[in-house]
Image (cartoon, rainbow, N blue to C red; front, side, top):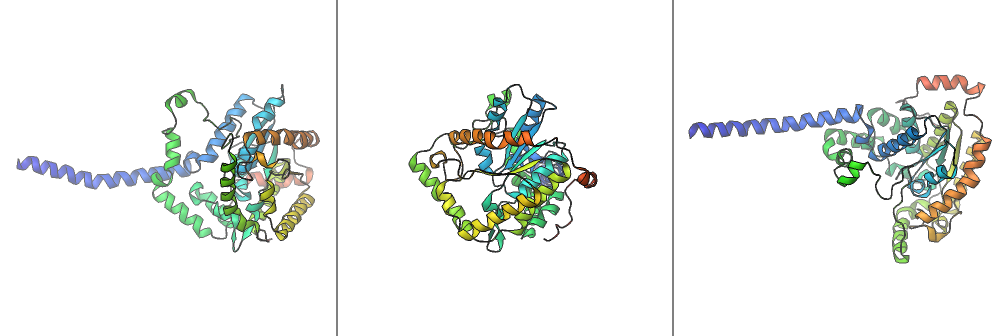
Length: 379
């Protein structure tokens, strides 16, 4: 009996020692995987979009590629697959790369990621989300959306230059890397397909509400009472921002840096303002509206970039919360976007190659295209 008790005590001691060691080893392994492996472990939303985009590229290899970067407004408002189906016999691929909680900084980050991973659009449309350009007190509004745990080390070094509180990004990154099994639990569950029905996993099906061309919708329809409730939530989130008068320098710089990157890469680009309901539009202060208009005019003039202004294109009943479109509204917007934006620009844009003046900067840029940790110069 005494020998059995000692054996049990030894086993308990070994478990006590090795369990935390094994746990720590798993965390170290996951942290290394976050830095060197699939980006889906730290930014599942981005990875899901990229995988769908690669699937479309395999269907039509070598064809022209149009990518639309944007926020959840774009994600829910542009039915890219409809644009592809409307061009029968064409190899053109249009992909909706809208991501929730995305402003100009995250759009620029997405473009860097795509280029670094060998995905180069022939044509690019970039949503301008007006609230994401706003300086809310002493804090850029998009700063609430930038999350350090979604980024890798080089990206943190780059993104902190667009943040008024870079320490927050670094703390978030450190916390996520110290215990990735907790910080990245959603991404790990997605990677292991734990929450997906077995039949969907076996057949590789896309989840309901998700389109293979990147379009996703939240609700098919909403009742008047539901719409009122959702609009109240929207006003609670944005009313304070829309009452401001100044634009955030990091956000506006991210827009112009994205345009500079497209110029260096020889990628034709256009800016897009997505639809907003009448109540949402009425919430802008006159000073903020003037600041936005002045900035957009400056960008159009200095960068010679087209602007598709769709803010008033859709009637209120086609929104479910005042600025996100229902599927019927998305279809109406998509068809008008094709007619007044996509088709005219595709006809007018020439082959996306750099001019002689930008060829030297293009070659230099491609040598250093990975995200740079160097500070972004002040305006």
